Image (tube, rainbow, N blue to C red; front, side, top):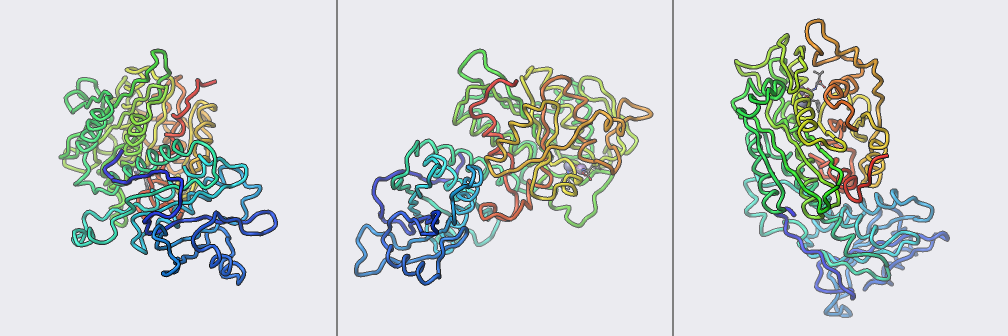
Length: 510
Ligand code: BES
Ligand code: MN
Ligand code: ZN
């Protein structure tokens, strides 16, 4: 999938030359510890008896098979990560618990320099082996992520630990489609890591052209169709939003389009539109200096949309999927858009620019209108780091979700719950659109302070018409996400796994 090289395989027997074996004991209804057998069973039982290890969730203990009794096939270390009482937990709770446990295993592997990890699957009553292995591997791969390519000593570090290279899964007595779980985890988690990579690259290293380049490479690898519209095309199509935002910048804008065609002729079409703002200075309505460097992350929506396409290319679902990424930065050069200016969007709607920092909706508006007109999708989902207001409302835990189709919205919420990326729906009554009425143009680009996330969505809604549509405001969750063992500091890769889940097993909307 990505250039991260990791082999994940299955074996019948434990042991191998693993640097670390991971085992996940849990408590049954009588508070007895249930543990898949390992080389250090009696040592673990001792620790449990002494109360040093209670097998509670999040707890861990590292034990070492004794030198002389150690078989050749034994691992060097055995890490136990407790799961606590699993009885009565719902499946999404168990998934998240296992993902977090995977994250704990990843940091233990890093600390001990264990690049070859053996994983002994716990056999959790009422929970499939497929879901068990999927969640654990997701947690391990997501948790093991680091971005250190710009560290001068990274060459030296190459000799040290550079991430987990091999995971061997031992499905004890776990039943189910283990290989399928491994594949799903690997595809989704590595795609989310790729989205993090794009986000970590700063504005001078990840430009609109970089989006185009990555989309082209995916198109080639997976036989998808890629088109990249340049400034000339945008002028011809009268995309005043994207051109307007770009006009204060020296960096050329790109509208990147990647199309996957399902094998079946008569499949639905899902359109993803991701905000690819490679740096948001605010433009003439300049942002304050403190924390402005984080605005290199303003392309996380676009990164997620392309990452989803990588999984789509890999898994080939029974639905057409198209991703559109409007990509530009937002700078305040001498030809920049000014407050008071009026632009005309693709399709003809005019907009009064009250604040040049409300640029995301301008580039999304053109893209939504164009994508819908051109591809006539069954539904459209846009995702964007769109408003600071969503952080005030939902903090860094839930993604804001709005739209015009309740079935689509509920499916996304469900997919998010399953993925450990919770969302929360906000209302979108037509009354909110009154805040973006302009005296001089069709609409204006901000609705003032009240309900900033909703009025931004109301702006987008003007461009989707009757097409079923959902909008994810990931400004609070794309980085600084709720602390989790499997989400290192920095960009989270949020929404990738949720939207992958939405696409998998797609069914017609009600
Ligand atoms: N990219 C920002 C939103 C943002 C802010 C994301 C903070 C993550 C953290 C967006 O382009 C923006 O500047 N929005 C303005 C809109 C306002 C001017 C109506 C905002 O939220 O302040
Ligand atoms: Mn902005
Ligand atoms: Zn922005």
